[in-house]
Image (tube, rainbow, N blue to C red; front, side, top):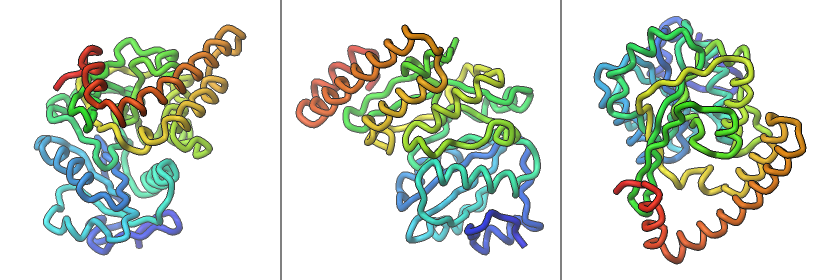
Length: 293
């Protein structure tokens, strides 16, 4: 019988595929959350299949009303579907971590690519370097895509420092950081008190206790317009709290943090107004800042 956290269900195809109830994976687990967004999931799945030499297992945690697995009966290449109850994003990610800890043999890297996120097309060319790494946290570059202006920009967190994450300057993205399975046992899961920025809290928490290694290649692409993009004000408030928790306990840092919070609130309002009323201006601004068509 499949060994899994209480409340989880796995379709029969997966139960048969896992034999004794465990997946053996030593290299990479790609974890995707799906919630009634089949078209976006297609983007994610296709990007994985395009990396033909990739050695990885794809775990899909699906809370859709109509299970997405029924559309992928033809696709059995290292993919497993788990149907779970509708939960918040980070609650679902924690469920995935719990399932992995109980049901995956080996100590692979874990990469969260949710529906609409995509693995970069050249990722598999460099996977051998990852497999030879002894680091618990490896991060790299990623592309941010704006579907409104059809522009994109590459974010390269080279020479990353914690203050980059505090002040959103070339930050590490959860779509472009690979975490050893054992690290979740050491550092815990995502803090669900944060509804939007729990991944940033996790990154900062882990960076206090383990070295992060930079991987000088593009790992993934993700589109603006998702949950975090739609909740920028909440994210800004949570980042203020995260800076208070993880940042230096000095007056100057606290003062800068408050000013940064106020500036970002103003920026969010301006961006919302421009996006809704003057999208052409937004396109010009982004091109000026180095975004590409």
